[in-house]
Image 1 (cartoon, one colour):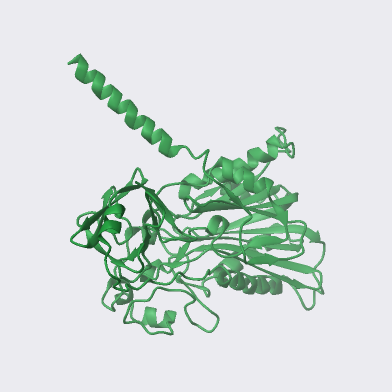
Image 2 (cartoon, rainbow, N blue to C red):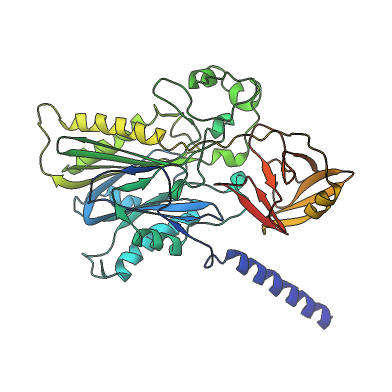
Length: 454
């Protein structure tokens, strides 16, 4: 009996060590301020830094206001995740806001917001006096579930690196920063790749900037009414419009109009954003700016602010412009309308180029190569994929807690060759498996890839 107890204890310690190792993110490679498509604008009062863990992939975006700013917040979604939201609503009317932090990682990513606050203290920008505490606020998106095979999240290390790398006037667009693994259109099964967007407009001395991370359950919509990005069902029209989807609702999301039923994870969606102006606004005006811009986003995101969205919008004034620019022509309600249009531009700029769906080519099988691909590939403690070579064909089956995209848990599925080292499972969404790296399986190689080791 003592021997059995000792064995059980050793086994338990081994499992604990494995879990601890899986949770250790200290050696993960980081990317800072990455992106080929950039919005470049002139506004020294806003410094922006982005950090990413490509192994996730997931990331964080930090907005730092070196001279502090006035801020408020408008929360509309049914499932928000935020830090210091209630304090921002109190209406103190003081220039207190240091930073706005947008992050992936669901509620685990909220660590990013408090990490920026402690970085401000550790770097000597703020201290422990009651009137000089660092104030950072933030919100998160859900980027776990069926969109990736691990549970890496933006942590203190990544957020502080992004804050310290912040620079004025440069914002990476698309699947970068907090939008590194965002999706849109889950309500209709579109599951398109999304990201973070931004736009800037200046009218005379008045400046308006909008920043957004689009992880919406609704579809992103162009001004002419077309859906911006969607993996359409085979029976859907080529020029897809939200009007088509809503006219056939709820069949357009349940399968009666051909689309596949969405997974539960597709209902965990959020759009988080920030609108900034240099116009000095009182508390009521700043609240109204947040409310009107948030309401205007329902044009670009259809539907918007549902039960399954965690939509949060911050409104910030740097108060550099003491008066309205020609009050007779640009009153505050004109500022609000302009800001809504800038936000629509920002939402549209969040859409990255969508990966194409690979098509099987039917190339001749190589039995020896297939045998070398066989084995069990570990993506995380929750997901493994077993690859089987049998009868000149290649099969895959997931094991662990959940399936691996279209690779099921219950049964194996055949992998069809695209090239000698790449295989696919045909379907509505991209799924490409690459065996070109020794003892590794790369799923969907490229910007959103997942790597399993044998």
